[in-house]
Picture 1: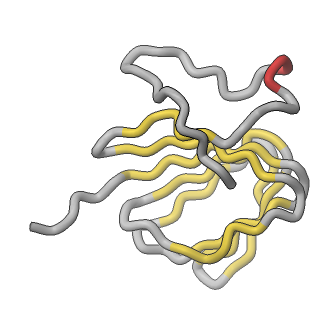
Picture 2: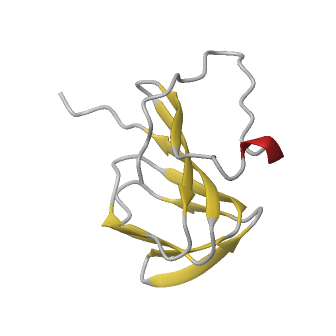
Length: 114
């Protein structure tokens, strides 16, 4: 999973998440990166495993295409196109792409304690 150092969206800019002319060259990319918010398009090939980890802030994982297994809160759940899951801050989670998958991951960034 390589998040390319591409340009982030500016306020008011339209982002095309999935277009036929983007496939199969679609790549993982941080789309929005601010002190408060991170939005990433995560593109995973079938079988790819993102090991268990946690982030400080709340997170949503929205499956745009394909299917992906999410391990969190002691359960394994499969997301298919148009399914979304919410995870609380500090929730340990792992991801495994069942098929070639495109997801939209949103992370609320929590400021570091003073």
